[in-house]
Length: 211
Image (tube, rainbow, N blue to C red; front, top):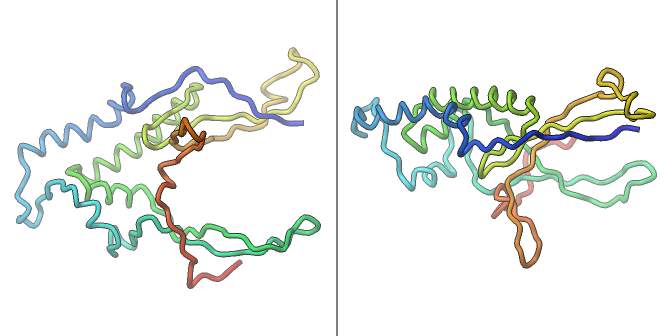
């Protein structure tokens, strides 16, 4: 029989900790220097100042990055029939379709378009974030990124006949990363709200071949 168990030393919050300062030192250093030397928007190689409408202007446009098509709030789906042997219901259900993978390079490109930070600096912070998170997770900490969620490690183990017979080599068989998205709870209804799914709309996918 196997089970999951993990004890955490603490929680790292990246909006207030020194770890976040380490990640963003490059970014803020660049922004400070950039404000003194920023070129006008008319110059071909200049960086345009941030705009409240910049994010909205990107929505629905093609060609952002290389092959990214930005569609806000639309989750595509396909239907499938539950035909599992003995336990299948025969009913049809929805399954989300993921049309592409957005990597760190594309994220950095998007972030650059929404602020005055260079893509190379954003990319460097994203790479360093992964390294620092690995260190903190392996030090038995939870890593909480505000407005995003919390990451933590969970252990899978087999049972031992007694506590003194439990050993790492014999009983701990795996370690997994868990993610809990940021959420809020309505005090009156007890319903949890996840920002990542707020306002999402659904649309049946076309042009896909069912497996």
